[in-house]
Length: 348
Image (tube, rainbow, N blue to C red; front, side, top):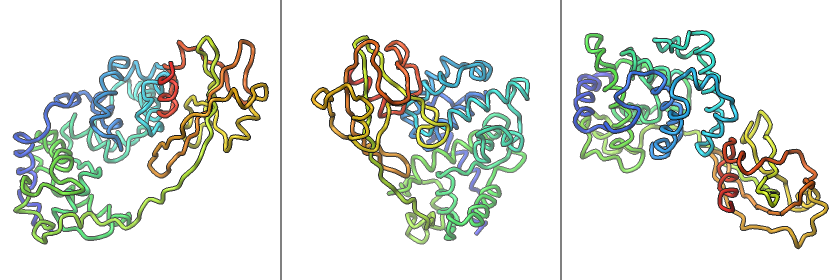
């Protein structure tokens, strides 16, 4: 199996130089802060989406010290819409740890990087290889797909032991120590090959530099790899969303609990049904409630069916539910769940 790795790194480095992606804003830098930020943003998020957020985030927080000194609510506000908000909280904690415990300098090895909040083994490897030429392999979804196809690795990656074995094989594919300087291009090549050629569906084998080495191509069934039997179980939930607003544009918002969906974000109050929502605004008759069109918000494991209900309240009034009035000039800068921000901005 491992004989398929002979010449792999050299082929990949050469291919990336000619055919890989070169225009992404986090490329061509050895600054671990910028590389780390891009890696965290790119977790489970499309490149096109990150391209919108990355420059705005850097403009506000150009270095780790400015991020560490920021208020978490401001960080969540800039992150709003990217999803997976635990990433933003870990990002903030990590910056504070780098400043407090490492003098504002990121550690230079993958092992030490993994000790920081929110940095796992693959992210640590990305930062260490891009910024410090360390010979360590990343192991994101693209790499799992490339390596399992290259090696025709048919063991179930839902089993942790099999995933560890494939990662160990990925380590053996690294450029030799004498070519450690090629690690940034090699690591970028792994990402590029998986994202643009060796894709999950309809892989472009006719453009792949690894065809002479690839076990899955030799079998004629690249889409059979990687093997992962455990499937995510999707669930569905319905919420009625109370959108109370005053004539001056202030909105009634509540901060979500520290655990659970949208943890720590500011949100319109949610109710299990219309009856409980109406009980929160006893002074408003049913005819004054504007029931909007329901819509679906898709999360990784769950579909949320949201029913927005809008009402206008006068000065001195407030709904009978936890929360506070947030002025119109302030709420756009808070961390808001994407569907809540969409609702509020659509009617500004």
